[in-house]
Length: 198
Image (tube, rainbow, N blue to C red; front, side, top):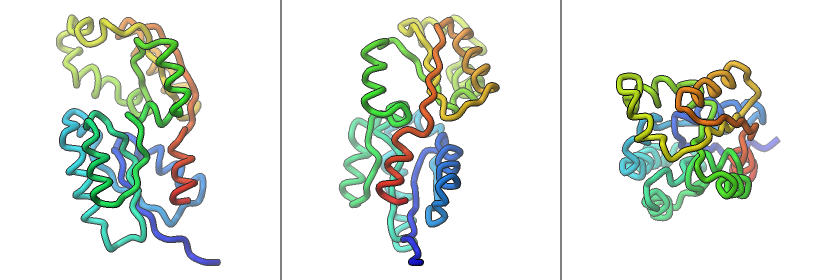
């Protein structure tokens, strides 16, 4: 049996667990993963050049490179880097859209535009990334500043996990938002990797 070309996946650290699970589930042993830290989203202007650096670092060591970052607030600059480097990316505005699927996400936004989203990663690290990260643990009155325009917390779950569901439900309560869970699985990440690298 012919060996598949080696593929490097560049993604956000917030996706590492899910992408690794996909690789295992589909026996994509020809794929490897390298991540930028999840907190880079706090400074999205740094994402394009950080991704470029990862591309340059990997060039010549693998047969193909795929980028699993969406735009993530870069205002199109990440896409510019991918075009300049000749690298294929998953596209989309953010991981919520990719997990839910583009059409499903658009329908969700049309139905309830005032939604705040959690993924498995964000549900798992809500206290550290949202409460402490935004200073809500020290200044609870900031809740209305950050979340006053939201009505609902939508947990886009990658897998059935009762503990994470409880964490997401507690997060909604902490933020004073209605709670909804949607089991998305790995959404368009699975389809993209199957088509482009699997």
